Length: 77
Image 1 (cartoon, rainbow, N blue to C red):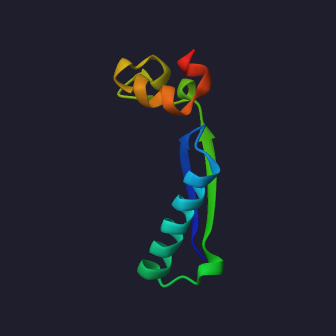
Image 2: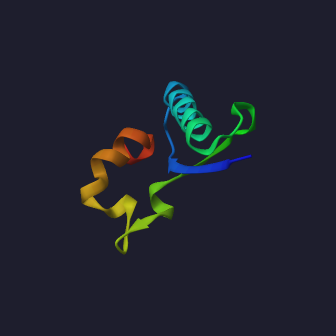
């Protein structure tokens, strides 16, 4: 039984999550031979102030500002 944990910026809507889990479940069934009902996916929402890339917090990284503002409402204010 595959247990898949996905960390992503908070703010994705239910339709995005639904499409994602359908695609990932299909891949697990095809690639791993898992039974569809046994594929478990858990989302862990993260905020840009608790993750860093290249030694820079995502909340302070100008190169990520556009992405952060799309998914984290408080980042765009």
